[in-house]
Length: 432
Picture (cartoon, helix red, strand yellow):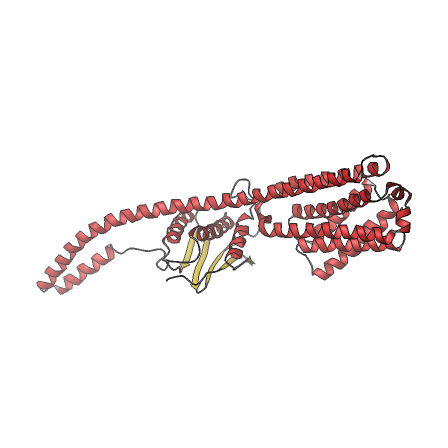
């Protein structure tokens, strides 16, 4: 049915479309040029040379073997999560399957069966086919890329695999009923295109549902952080009330102390007066955890966090320089500290005498928050911080905040220490 130079060129261009789409969506293990060349060469050989000689054009076995080969190559050459890489492969093949069906639907059946249309108008037919693939693959690449940037870290692998089952079943269905349509079915092209539109709309609806699920996951995480903020503020203001009562008592005591010191001085007992004053100062000395943190919300949260970490055997060494008014919302600020410290505390699990170094500096217009903590030598499967959410949700939220405030997030391991740094840009309205 398909033969000649036009068919070969079409297959090569289609393979290139596939490879480019994968490289737009996924992160590369090697350089982009090497990845494109190797993927293009291997896929072309397997899918359009080896399998083309062994199986007929609409063979389901050819589809399965070819799909597995493409999935394996993309898994090897790219570093994203396995579930997301498989979804990318399935949606690439699904875009091509849709192009196949639409092309078959608009061409005369008799000429398809006889192969006449490919012999007489091959260049035009294949050009239309590539045009359809280009549009569907472009839409696939842009959608997956945009979705990945916003939500990839907010869902578990099992949720991605559940999504995978839907387009995979559609893909298999298309290749199963397409031969029946060409050779047997009385359906018109309008029926076929309608079925394809239903499939596309269903995929878009499912993807939107996953987007909402991811958004809810982020909200749940933020809610956890804000609950901690409320508890810490409640503790902080309870402490303030207690402190106010202590101050009233101290004012009365100070009057008595001053009266005693004055009496000692008047009687000429200067040495006794000095010793008495030193003793009073020593007894009434108050230790402030974060003297350079003028933001009471952040200070109360960090004080509570320091206490909680201490109960877990983890020491928090914090150097916090924050102005009283900052053009970063307190909920966002708490999300930053909460996610950074929770990730650090999780990494310290099982490490004796672990300590976390947290630093915050503000130099208009940039707020820099950095954290260093011990990194475990061997990665172990750990319990999720939040039930039902992927463990990468914290870094995803930090990345979102970096985008929101036109900043930058960096994290990585250096030997036995893990570093996280977040830079947020303000509008230079902070008052120190």
